[in-house]
Amino acid sequence: MKSKNQATLVLIKPDGLKKSLTGNILTRLSETKLEIVAAKIVCVSKELAEEHYRHLKDKPFFGELIHYIMGDLHNRKKVMALVYWGPDAITKVRQLAGSTNPEEADPTSIRGSYGRITTGGVYENVIHVSSSEEEANREIGLWFSPEEIIVNVESGSYKEPKPKIKK
Ligand code: DAT
Ligand code: MG
Image (cartoon, rainbow, N blue to C red):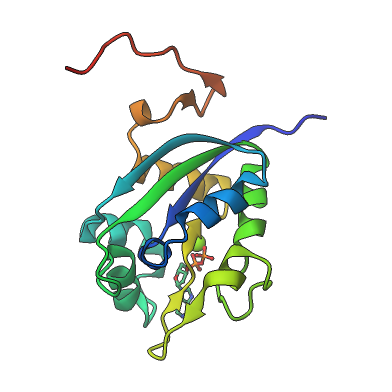
């Protein structure tokens, strides 16, 4: 049976951008044969950062995590946000990304290859990837408006091209 198309959010975090890893990471992700259906560069607000990581707000590392995703630790106030789409997208992308702790991640995974733990204990793990369908839907809604995504995630169909031309 053909598996259902899923959408998943990928963020290339400020350390990934600072280390010029965008090309490498996108090349690794292309191994999944999934489609990119939305992409942009985002300057991350405190509100967006805190909402994105709201499940961790009671953790001792929450404050540093917010600084990290906002680019405060890397002097790069930007993140690249993408939506990947296709069969089993969430599992496929998560497998390539590797474990949360970059020291424990498979060394051939993206986090295992490029991540590190700072002396202050921050997991600089280069990318964020959604971990469940529910989380993916919530996160995609936070980072993208529906018109920025070229497929209708719910129905799984492609949208019609927009006739309007920006002047
Ligand atoms: P993941 O990013 O693999 O989905 P998560 O949602 O549990 O993991 O945590 C989000 C981020 O928080 C993670 O990418 C890095 C950071 N983090 C998680 N656990 C941590 C810990 N024990 N110490 C420091 N940072 C941690
Ligand atoms: Mg997570």
